[in-house]
Length: 509
Image 1 (spheres, rainbow, N blue to C red):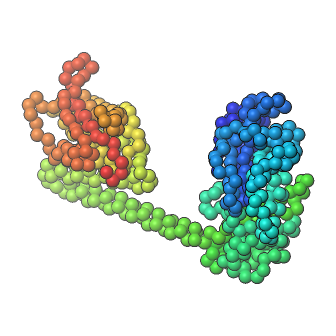
Image 2 (image 1 turned 180 degrees about the vertical axis):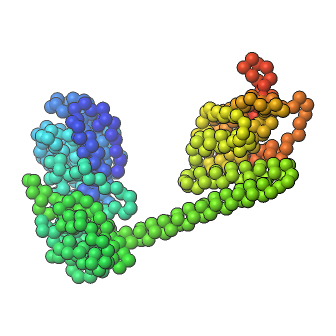
Image 3 (image 1 turned 90 degrees about the horizontal axis):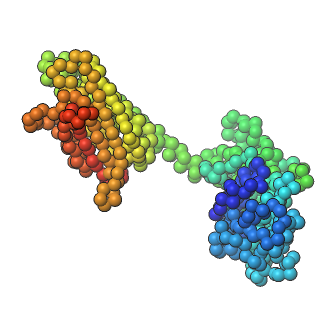
């Protein structure tokens, strides 16, 4: 089904709720197409003067549906096209006089293989649009009882559509979770809720629940009550409204390990309910797969939880061991190892909350920047700032990037105060932006600048932390990283500048 909605958005003569009703119709009219064995096209005036009876008015196709119960006769996608000259007179007549018009009414029979019916859609006495039904007449034969019932149901629905009574805009039915379709199974109920017709697929669906006897003549509400008693579950007090066809709603019946979803559509004529349609679908296999997915999802969450707990346990053991170390150098080494483990634990916890192929990491990196500074020197005054946005990154980039930020920021805090830190405040600013290289490939540029004492005047050898940084940047991020003296506001050397450039790669690069 295709939809072209722009004219509805900009048309000034639609009343509140008109566009919503038309959209609700298009969202649900596949059922009507299947019952009528017809292609459906929705026509709307092409100009803003469409609500006045001006000569020469044109129409545009807003939406189109093809039946799944028979072959299509409108093979081309007409959504967005203007109406053909041979269809325009009958659509214009349906619009102007608010009467149903057939192709033979105009003295111009449609091609022998196709017949067209134009139906005005009326709300509040106003014509909102015209719906045309296109169906084949070359395949006419002695119709079966199922076909006759389908067409009868379609005729009843078309009366409600023409009067603007169906669909009800306050009732929404999602296609998610196995929404029943016409071909899945159809029951027709009388005004008392007794079954007057059951399609073969409907009989099969209910037989999965243990309903073995003939369905016709039985009360669907009575069948539902028997199934609920047999299942021994909690009785749903609203379900009889569906099973008697009194309210448009959707529910599910379960029994004997099977599940059938039901949808009811009350039928009205002259304001009185006289019958109802109930679509049904066997969703046993869908529910079994849903349970499997839920079980796997719970297992994955439990694994993530245990990994996080294990990482936190390792960090706690490192903390305990560092307190028992006599050597200052040993305590410092364990503290740095603890910091790295905690970084991995935090990133893992953030990534485990979603299974997307890309992650919005701005908040994670902002938190990591602050924690890295606090873990490095909790007793000194450090201010952290973040400008720019990382945007969406693959999980494969997030963990090594977080470790790099942790090590670089910790190194800046540990060495930026110099020999006399008393009364001094260190500012660490991280700036990030996304750009494109010469080949047009997207890359990440990350700059970390501090206003500390800066790099040593003579050559310096990076410690273990910065060696880890270089390894992560080259091996995991496929990027480059550089250290250079920073510049203060007056242009004089001040602090240290670290620049990281890495391509933005997809998952499992």
